[in-house]
Image 1 (cartoon, each protein chain N blue to C red):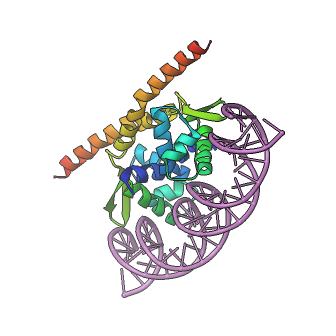
Image 2: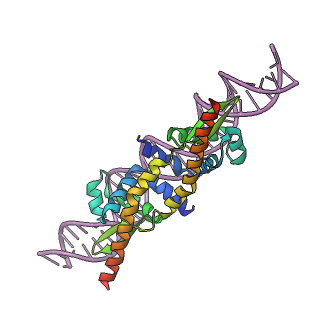
Image 3: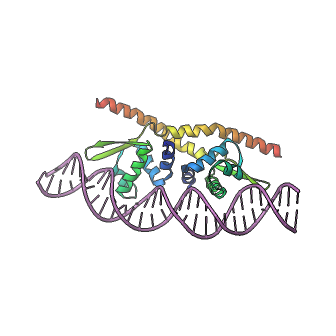
Length: 104
Length: 104
DNA sequence: TATCTTCATAAGTCATGGCTTATTATAAGC
DNA sequence: GCTTATAATAAGCCATGACTTATGAAGATA
């Protein structure tokens, strides 16, 4: 599975996106996330594992805790993917408008 | 389920992304997509339904065929979501670098 | 009208994924 | 050293989702 696949798959789950969004805001320990989000601690750990394998978050030990933070370059591939289509989309919009006009 | 949820879920599947990418390039009929992508025609239709409900593609009848094209504004929400984090990501990168420097 | 094409839907199968509880490992604090 | 806190992993459950074949509806073509 490519990283692109993993990234899209990781962001597909709402709970996991919620975790990512919190981590993006500021670094969190697992327990903090488990307190903030209504799923069990193991569920949080499992989601973090998926996010980590998609290179969206990093982790760092801090005593008994493990601090998760955003991988700074994590969303790069998503941005690149999006930009591949952004120009195309504008072009498509243009031709769509033109098509509508021609049809009249 | 919100449109944001639907959009991320729709883009999570590789086959469905492949369909979207082809449709983004140029408009396709269902049969064309079924010829190009190694799944059955019903599978294509099912994927297109998901993409349509996520507002990523539009369809238009053309005789017995049905032509699918990109919804010009379809990726807008994804772009907005991404931009929410892009600044944060750069900031996080900055603080990460600073943290590394301070630690030395 | 009869046939062929195109596409959507129905129904069923199978794998995956998100969740839980139970358990274990490691570090901190008394 | 013992207990408490933190987090990862294991095992199992259940819903969802991606696919298939079968079928039916609607338009094109003869």
